[in-house]
Length: 584
Image 1 (spheres, rainbow, N blue to C red):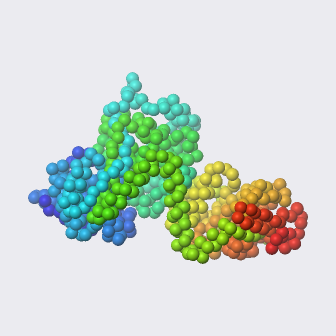
Image 2 (cartoon, rainbow, N blue to C red):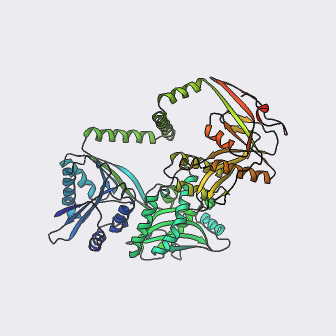
């Protein structure tokens, strides 16, 4: 056996043919093992992954082994090339050639002086598992295996059937009720996009819905990242040539309720990247989509299984009738690092056995990380100021009233009511801006609760530029004062939590947005107010350029656990400016 190491995935038609022929000869062929999958990963993640492609050739110079690996940019760690994208990863060869092939790969990795390897998503039933442990030790590596995921699967031949040969699915009454509710105007149906152009047309809506869905659950979707979107587009382009990709939409008329970016490969329908319209969450559209996919797979004799992939979501367990364990395997040169890995894993398993303990540990870790970040960013002086604020602090908050002095406007921007789709668009636009992502997560929860009215300033292309919120003034809670405030009039409303993404600050979007919102409030018979701590210099400067005028101030003094607030709002018609200030 001759083993060749390449530092790229060659765009070679003959290699593609031999590679995929090898995949089809495996005992459990997977779409994640194909040449197309590896090439799509390389095209999308070339900035962060350095391919290490091991190809083995037999005596007739025919391809008999493939190991698609990669190193990180530092060149210190090796992993499966497709570990972050594929549900299953493995060394590809016939069973009788697996051991010499893995041996050859490990020998080359040892010569390249790689000290650490992490093989994620390796099926526990693969012969590779025992071979890695054996030859890792032979080359001086320490191997640790642990369960990564337990993938739920639906073996179609084992499903209970009705008299008409249709499958008996869980919660059938609920399923029928939800499908009827979503299909009041038109029957609910499945639509399958298979060609490159069809998938290209349907994919953006799936991505937007996925990002929005994650926002609702307090997370940032991986699809917000451009490289992930590029990967899915490239994968669809490559796999559509063989008819292996299928983007399924559950629809009624032209309304789409749920999506699944999946694959149909060697008798298996893969449930890979599902999502649904969050506005229809009460109808469980994802559950309904999976039920209809299983029904359709049962009706087609070409399918033997629906593979539900990674993730232990509860709805998958309702359908599954078998599972497949996949492992996370670490291979390390350092014994100390190896045993530290084992100790960390055992400790985490103990913590996970108690939900309260896990939540507590996560909270502590998050606080420590925030403290480290703040200390690193601001140093000792910031830490001293924070400590002093716990003992004594004084805060002055100024309140400004809208007075109709509008700055010149242009047609390049417009104000829109904030929606979940606009928040999702903002996540994808500012995915590398951590502060803005934290704001958008907070905004999504507030939007979902309906506790305030959100607005966003957008440019002519719909790009979000600035965000702000409007709520009743009376009883509004100011965190700067740690107290609720009183309004001068029942028609008063408060503008608050304004945010401009970091890259756009200094462009005047703040002043423009709050004026447009205040103008809209006035048209609705409301009087708009806004506030700012005196210490927030940027906000004060922005307000000075706007049509808001300072009316009064409130001042908070805090000593240990005692606080006092001085000042009061003016009555309607009272003169503005310094005469109304309670404490300056």
